[in-house]
Length: 342
Image 1 (cartoon, helix red, strand yellow):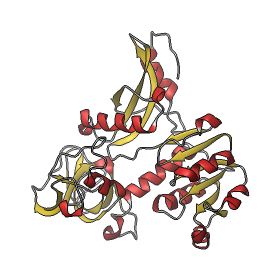
Image 2 (spheres, helix red, strand yellow):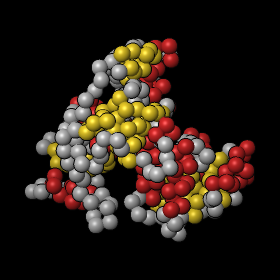
Image 3 (cartoon, helix red, strand yellow):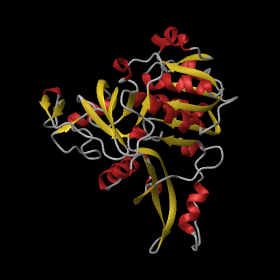
């Protein structure tokens, strides 16, 4: 097959069209003929070497996280897909004629969405969905007032739509020159984030779903009610926890279903912090994925919350409403120990 291959870190001139071996699916995987692939900021950051410390590449490498196309082969044990299905997915190595990934990384295309267009969606949709849950949790929304910053961006639009579906009152945060365009989003209000007078007139907010960061989120923190929530795609906002706000920064990764951080027993220190991760594919579990998770945590979490190690589990415990049941997870580690719950 042909693929766009990165031979060395650098600019776009390091990308070359080459012949590469055609991949074949293993157990639990499907093979897709790619009709379209998306270009995301993470791709050029990987290509340039900006992420080499946290997400190093084994060069030469095929980049690309977003793909859509037609299933041409299914691996042993796969029942959710068949040959001929049209799918989109968050994968690795999408800039190629064919890509193989775990069945859990894919979803069937809804009626009316063409594969040639769908390649722009997976990472945006997943990130937007994760931002919604980071902001509201698994089920909340009704009656809350939520501001979405960068509401006209790709992730922002997903967050606006999803939060409205939860029954929340949604305010779209945009630049002054974008106010008229943002009114087309069917939101309850539009706020010019670069206008200090408009920010001063904001009502008290229950939550902020942030895609902008920087000075903008710093100015918004005083507008959030005590015990309110900030969800962010850009890391923990400085000053959020000091104000008594709940803050959640997310990591969108094709091999991770969900992750959490808990305190577990330690024979020397009494307790240490551990990340517990549910992966999409057991085959992806290993030192490389663990290193990515730990690097992300070091960049995004306060030092006292940063895990020293990672455990991978088949499934994280949940309550009847689908919310992560952290107390039950802690009990698995603390059975027979004196617990210092964090």
